[in-house]
Every structure is written in C-alpha cells, then in structure tokens.
Length: 338
Image (cartoon, rainbow, N blue to C red; front, side):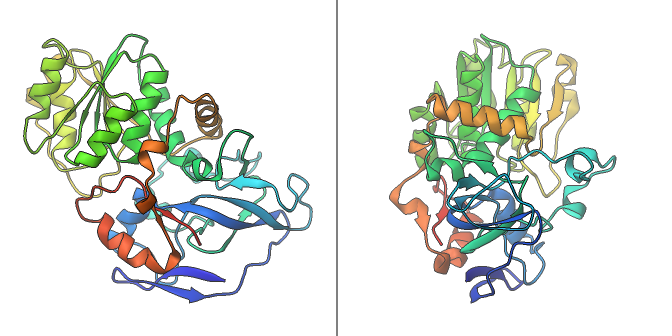
C-alpha cells in the first residue's frame, strides 16, 4: 500500500509498504479521508517524529479485515479513527499516568497511522459512523471532540460572552460548541481573512484582525468594557496566552486548548488582580466524541465553511501540504484522500 513515511529533517516520502495484517482483537480499515492534525504539523516542524513513522489519526473509512476474536465489526462497516473507550485494564497513559508528558510519552507512539491506504487499530479504538454523518464529517470528528472537551472543561454558562483566539479548525469548532452550550456572543481574533470569514459564517459575532487592531482592546470594547467570561486560547502564538489573560473579565477563565511547543511570556501583574482562572484541556474522551457526533447530526456543528475544493490532497502532495501549514496560512482544513 502507499503511505507517507517520515524520513527525518522535515521530509516525507510516499513509499510502498506492506498492508498490515490484523492480529487478534485488531481491525484493518481502508482509509477514505484523513485530516491533517495540527499536532502532526508541530511534530513535523520540530522534527519530533521518528524516522520511518507514518502519521495520521483523524480519519474515516471502512472495515476491510478483522482479526481473530473481533465481534464488534464486520467488513464494510463505516468507521472513524479514535473515539472508542478503553476496556478495563488497558493502560491509557493520557488519562491515567500521574506524570503524563505529551512530548516525551506520546509523540508518534500512536498506533494509528492514517496517512496511508490502510490503517490498523484495536477493535475498541474506532467508532461507528452513524447515519446522517458523512465520511468527510467523520474524518473531522476528533478536532470537534477536542472543542467539546474544552467547552465541557470550562465554566461556560448560558448567556456568557466568549472569546476564541485563533480560527483554525479547533477554534472554529470551539465557536460552534460554545454557541451550542449557551454562549450568546462569541468574539474571535484571527489574522487570516479566509479563516475570519469562516468564523463569521459559523456564528462569530465579530472577528478582530490582530495585525491591524489590538484584540484585547477590541474584544473588551465588544463586551461593554468588561471582558468575556471565557477565553479559549486556540492559537498558540507567542502573544495569545498573554492576550487571553488580559482580556478575560474579573473572575473570568482562560481555557488553554492550543499546544504551545515553545515558551510563551505572560505578565501576571496585569491580570492577577482580577483573579483569572486558567484551565487546560487536552485530547478527548469517548463521551466527547459522542457529544460531537450528536452536535454534527443536529446541525449545530457545520463543517462546510471549513472545507473547500483546495482542502483535499492526494498522498503524493503531503510534503507540500506540510510545508505550507508550518507557515502563516489561510488554509482552513487539509484532508488527504489516499
């Protein structure tokens, strides 16, 4: 099968490698769509991916083969990568390890590798794609579930005003999930005009271009000089965490969603007197995926503004896609069709 294999030093190559054979309790899935995740882009940017690895974990497809003892699935079932609930006794480090460190313990160690024509998973790791959810939507369920978790971890209440910093895929999902959870106003900071337009289309009340205006000043103005109750930091730019603290209202909350791989500066004296709370949200759980699917089915998450004809690429163009994504980009979402 064809697969995008990481060769080191910011270089992929599309190689022919053997189609994996599912062992006991495993499922082989033929990949239909595989979305490019920001985490994979960071691994590429910082050359943190082991040579020979095949990345990719946001995917949809159909069951092609099942291993011994698998009873949950049959050939032809529509499935999406991830979202399953670990059975009792499975050591799921992300949720169980007392000193979990993503950089040291998780980078490229995921068994999913969907930048390829086929991918193997444990039978419990995948989820069924329900009626009313397309294969394209299913490939983006994981980032939607990340946004669901962020909103669930927040203290958001019906009627709250919210800010979202960064209108990439996660930020765009956070806008919609926050609205679904009862936020009455959502303000966004985003320099890309294409992403800003998508944010407006999916329900943002206003978008600030941080290269033209100070987002703290503008968003505080939009909220009658008070500041938003909740700020979702989805950008991981060097200034955005500081901006999030500075714009939040008294006893407001900053929810850190973006993965910053480099130090970022904050000045506590500027916001500490307002007793701002910081909450971090990382990854997903089975319930987050289930809620995301419900919101997709109900039409409360609209992916159409995020997907254009230029979103879809073939495996042969993975290298160019990653080179583009590590730079300031107007791309909303890139999806591989193996």
